[in-house]
Image (cartoon, rainbow, N blue to C red; front, side):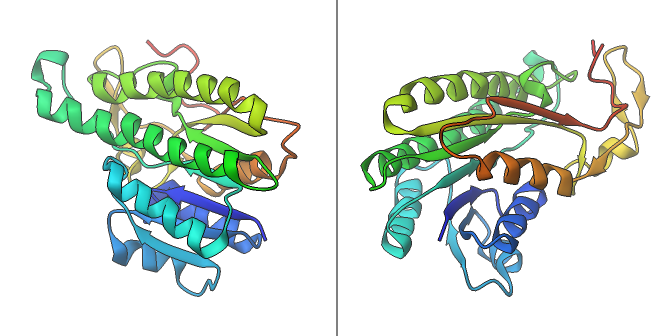
Length: 244
């Protein structure tokens, strides 16, 4: 039995990825703040383990991975998906509190989960596992008024590279998926109109989020001797190439 943790599993891409892994026979621990939303994602799947978690809280994350260890004894995959856009605005309009909250969820949360997963994967027998970080197109280029989100997503790229390097001696692979305009509740506004670099507001194309789940499944199904280091998946005609 292959085992996984998916953060942000209560909605959006986390829900789609979780359900795809469960359909493939994975045992999945669902992490997120809302127990009711996690339960909805897990409904009908006996291999789902619902663990309400605040990824920005060290003790909460430790409890998540302790539950995984107790339930299954090992971990094969972590999908670091939890994140928030945070408020939109120029740097002077973003409060320090909002900045810190965005960093806590997007960056510190990913680190805390990776830290616990790394320790479990390193200690288990057979040793090793895989970590997949959700980087976003904003790991490459920003949208206007997104300094907190963009800075954290650029930092995820550094986290991915460091995990890849530090994981080599222990059979721990780490890759990153950068997603542009997958159709979820969080991105619903993009299809109706979003601010562009030139100040205009235009609708952007989206694509079916199941394609993201398919990409994650591909990454997860590789043997640990192979790794997708970075994978970018976008709506074909979204303004990514040439953005800004």
